Image 1 (cartoon, helix red, strand yellow):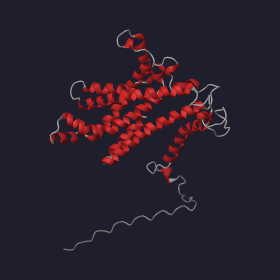
Image 2 (image 1 turned 90 degrees about the horizontal axis):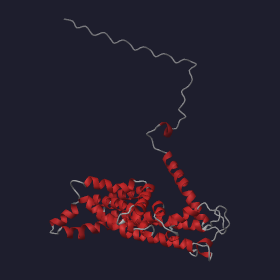
Image 3 (image 1 turned 120 degrees about the vertical axis):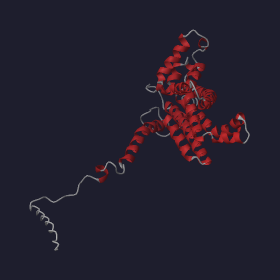
Image 4 (image 1 turned 60 degrees about the horizontal axis):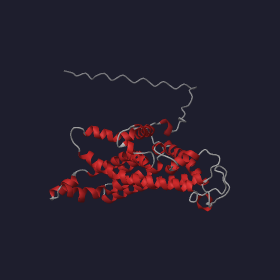
Length: 326
């Protein structure tokens, strides 16, 4: 029996010749970084530096003109420390208007730190251990001061202190006491957020190990948890200080007379005045430096403790939370 071979496959058709008048294929002029949306974002650095320059140049200009030799705040007339301490009557440290505002701002900041930091610290511990009915509502109410517009909070406190004829509100008059209460009201939430971030990074393992070794609840808190929370408490104190120095709306509504004027209030009242001198720029420079020292110090403390304890990721996360709040 003979086997026949299968027929060969048909030959492929010959390719069509290219027309003689076809234009040559040119490479795309569009760069790869523009044509490929998933490539390296080369515009990111440029956009970041443009934004930083846009944000910082006005501040730097105000700082530079605080060292102006003349009275102008827009025309440079030479370098001088006249408006800082050189002028015996109009400089920052000789004019009683500026010195009183600076002293009162520091006084409010000190009182705010002494009250808000312990309250927020204890509130963070309580909320982290509260399990059961009402814990979700308490955690939500703790965040209300962070989300409430500052103007609405200031008006509400003003109405409480001036319109409600109920104790203890009738015993609180506008002035330093009302300003401290107003600042503490919104500062406590920041302390709670920072301390609870540290509690989440620590976890319950250290306390459980202390209890396994024979320590009771008070000893585990005192000798184990509190030392681990000290950097967060210190960072919270610096953040509260920076918030108090920088606050305007609540402090303005709670003020009563010239003795309760702070640096932000003084800047707002005189920023557009034609008779102001570069001493106002010097006061603004002091406020900027104090705020940067507070926030930067808190960030460095958290970073240092995180690297020292080997928990750098948690320290970086708390640092980002810290700068995000500011």
